[in-house]
Length: 96
Image (cartoon, rainbow, N blue to C red; front, side, top):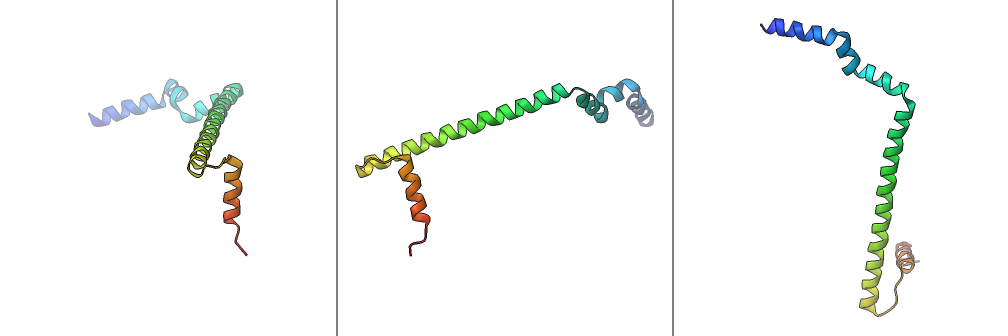
């Protein structure tokens, strides 16, 4: 029984329709034939990445602004993002 089922399965796998549909090589051939499709896929991926990067940038600026706002409230001095950056650079440089 098991052997028969196995043989049927092998017949299915060896059949042309199955091979055309589910064989990864065949699928890849189809994909490489349609360059436009592949290009669209890449465009989609790149677009998503761009969106993510934009969101990250917006988030960082927001955090920086909040942080600066907090510092200026605590110290009573005006504090900008650029000051924050220059301060961090100055603190990192070794004091001679």
